[in-house]
Amino acid sequence: MAESTLARDAGASPDTGTGTGTGAGTAQAAPTTIGHPVRTFVIVGTAMFMAQLDNLVVTSALPSIQKALHAGLSGLQWTISAYTLTFAVFLLTGATLGDRYGRKRLFGIGLTVFTLGSIGSALAPNIATLITARAVQGLGGAIMVPLTLTLLSAAVRPERRGLAIGGWGALAGVAVALGPVIGGGITDAASWKWIFWVNVPIGIVLLPLSRYWLSESHGPSRRLDVPGNALVSLGLFGVVYGLIRGGQIGWTRPEVLAGFVAGGLLLAAFLVWESRTAEPMLPLGLFRGRQFTLVNLASMLMFFGMFGSVFFLIQLFQDVYGMSPLAAGVHALPWTAIPMVAAPIAGALSDRIGGRVIVGVGLLFQAAGLAAIAAVTTTTVPYSHVIPGLVLGGIGNGLFFAPIANLVLGSVRRDQEGLASGVNNAIREFGGVLGVAVMGAIFAASGGYGPTATLSAPQHFVNGVIPAVYTGAVVLLVASATVWALPRRARIPAAA
Image (cartoon, rainbow, N blue to C red; front, side, top):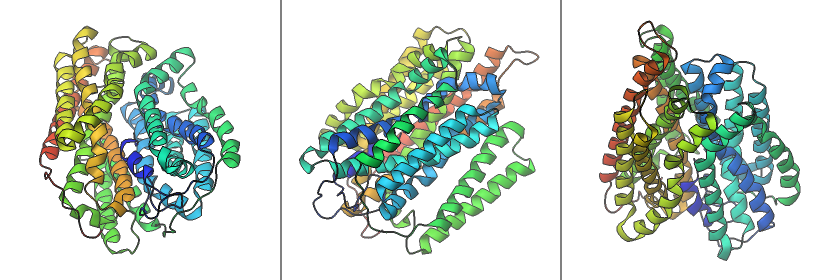
């Protein structure tokens, strides 16, 4: 889900690497082109589609994975979070490595790692192996995805760059919209393992094509922030581990407290390190601007509510309402597909009345949608009663994604846009990880999988879903309030 804030910056990024959709660089001279544009679009577009699809395609297979691997709630949470957390942490690193060692070379490495992670996921005999393989997939995606835009931007003439980037963004939107449907269809037709196996032949075909069809380019050589990456990775893992385990075994258990304490200390050390190192992976100076800070907070909260809710709603359709994986994906289309229609309209409106208003209203729509779904959810509710909430959520998604890029990029200097875009995407992905973890803990406190002595399995599950989804609605309300607190005119910090 990293597409929205990448596109505009990539359109202004020269092929020499002075600005990437997710990297750290500065836009400078007018770009020249390297490589064949159509071939490049086919390769990087396919790779990006495959990686973005894996953000949501797994959700439709979660009930099947749970039954096949005898996984509990924490196992399913880590199946999602291992991918998104690794993706978020290494997103900026992937772009930096590409600038330094060659984007074509790193793209091939990322594609290889992603393909190997897919093989490991398909072959996983237990949930622990699947989680590990998903983390490998996330690492490969984090290296590969930011470079898809840079390589495409370098291969297209300046006057046609907007069209190419628009096509790239459309592919990303289709991947998000069809993720649950494709995942459900594959799971229905074959098994959950095939949602990973389908990546393998694609990766095998793309690897030699990328070697011979893509042209190499480099960016400004930046020192890799290894200590910063290690600190933030371990710190986030500790916090997420505490959230997931705490909901299962209790918040005062030593291992849970250790996760929170260690994670918090490591994240504090990360901030200290980033404030002192010469070439930080996360320049804290960007957050001197009020708009940049608030937009990123709103983005994190939005993904918190959306990812956490989708995690449970797809399972609700299957485990409680008895839908097949494919049917569950199709029934989720009002939520996932409507943004493809709403986003262009929102983009046009934002040029007239400003992105702040559109995004704020969009988040209100999403909050209302989740609240409406939670209000009608029972073990026997007709699907028609759920549709209004799904439609509201879908419209809200579309209103959010189109203007948010301009709000992010409008809060920093022109030469900071690439870095700001990457930071926003990383924070959004981490918001999704937090949403799955926190809403999972709320679910576990009130419900769970399987029957109890007094409750049927469907009722037990619904009892957990309702407060979890209401929590998502409240978080989205806070996100909307954050957007309304944005200054009408951004004050861009003098230095970052």
